[in-house]
Length: 378
Image (cartoon, rainbow, N blue to C red; front, side, top):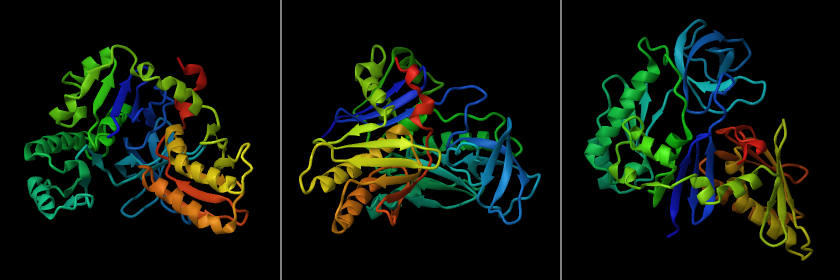
């Protein structure tokens, strides 16, 4: 089995997932300060400002001159104050996509205010385990539901209850004393996201620098391990910058360039524009009859990883290498299989009249070029 390592570091706060020696995921916190954009998962206090006729949804003030857009307007009214959750990064010059439906996510549990009931992940297929988990977690009496994630499989009742208490405290903070939202927005850190989303299956090791390692073992940040002593036991002191130790900076530098080398002589260019992300696939010096198909299949297998590491989303337009029309199904199946393995929601829109592949990908992250400009590399 390939070794799975979570790498955590500060200045800036960042996290990486390395599987079998290959960088599989990367999270870097955008620069702090007044210009820091609202990030997906954060809960903000909002005031409903406008509900224009003929426009889907409503607009809300998030304070500090920021505007949020809610796609649904049911139950909303102008002047209403309520918490909203950021669901995607904002496009340049546009409002921040937010939702009135709050989710408080943990490693094993998710709290769903306003959606009562206990639900178990469909990935847990054993009927006896599903029944045990459903009986182990009691939903709060205030209409808040509980979802048991796939990582809950095999967890002891005491561990589930400890995480539930942590999440209930987080929910109370997010709703605020008057139900209008938090008194102070709590940023979602890369460290929290990594320990929440990359620990199923459990990592072989969690590497952190000396100072961060000390803080993670302290009472203030131990909650990031979601009451899992076995996970906390995997924390190791890297003795310095763990990114440098695993030679990740070299690969991150390559991610800031548009060219991606593929097996053989093929390559592709991944370039964001204001309207969309363009992907151009080339065969290089390979002029064999199947060169176009081979290059395109290699690009489809690699593309979800490249988009994930570069923090790119929105509309994706792919110009494949020269293909026979009969090969389109093979390419489409390969791409869909690769997208299914990617945790970021991406839909296949189809083929254009010009033979381009079109995707629509959720904007879950800021582009790497914004969170870590090339001049900021060590």
